[in-house]
Image (cartoon, rainbow over the protein chains, first blue to last red):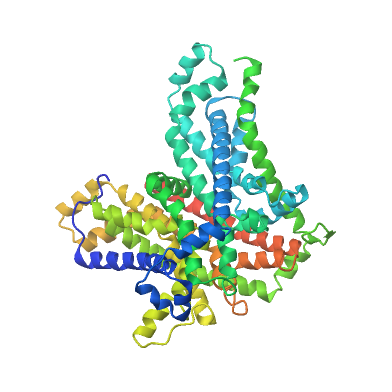
Length: 278
Length: 290
């Protein structure tokens, strides 16, 4: 933290406010964790039983043994990683093209891409559902991955990044007779790794947490992602297996993304702020 | 540069532009076209001109959904802005504990809407929820957060605020970092009080950030969907149904695709006006500073 940050300790009233706020942040998470560690029959009588032992890992065993949750986790991983890889490739190529190469209509094409930043999901999701239905793409990994590839922010982000890299580097390589693609692949791509990490984590998170599109595209439970799968568990809660089991699903589904958050905290915060202030 | 080279640049941008045109631009224009038809989800189409829009503006349920959406935005946006500004002011410090608190307040934002509603359902629900357990322990009647029309909208708002603190807090922190330190030093030389410094330096310097936060949050809350669908299903009797949930129900409950898309276009216009207003306000501000 630079200049404006102070090293001063927090004044007491502010400290009390922050601690109360932190308690409100943590209490629901802790309650969820405790519920997930209790047997369903005990919670059926009174959910306050979660506050005292005995605790058990039984609900987690049930998730791993006989539920669809691990399959949904796998689907989420496939969709999010597939989206991320494709977005990084497409946006890096396009970003390099817009930042470094000269070709007819370059400016108008770039503006055409930036216009997409003003189109919210709601304006396209229903017609896209029609489009995918006519192609027979619903209930497939491709159908879940494709919509994420129209990522104008990614192109904007990569273009800005490539523009900031000094031109001498690729000019030197060009004198050595390297092709455009070789320069991109061998010189600029390695230099853009920090930007790749930021855009990658940002894309992964958005894809992992997406709810609206998988809700209407994946309608059979074998293609559910975690978000849709857990939504269906939540909706069917009254008929099914119990509170502890449901909350164990919530914890189980949170763990991968919280690990990603802890490792990539800087990139996530940076990318979200960047997307907001573009 | 050879002629071949001049067109070579296309090869780099074409893959993206292809996907982008097919997946975003084409559906966008398809949407405008479909909204002028009586269309169902299965492909039947009949041209009706602006009928869907006319119907929409005579539809009391549409007005109810709009009202719910604006009420939610009015509850969420000011609260979120004030809370995150206060958090940013308190946590703009180079101490280890401030860093941990920042990480904690941001952490809920990385969870999906399904997990967030799952967590909050069993905090709010009157039979098994955490709040109800605390209330009964001190002898109070549990609040029917998820079923009583007076409480469903606040319940959705509380859940959304808990979920959304992270980003605006970080934006305010970034804004605070950009205030030149010498302004504070000058104020200290003038023996300005803490309050004077805050109201004369800190708050005016955060104007642009505040506009950004308010506009972004308003745009986000106008499109609120998952929380309402999962926590209350828009009930009881539609009292907590925001506009996107209404669009979803028309399309996938009643299969009236044309009508649903028309409602989505109205929402799109609202969000677009907001985006343009934010752009205008923030560029105008920059000119004023120069």
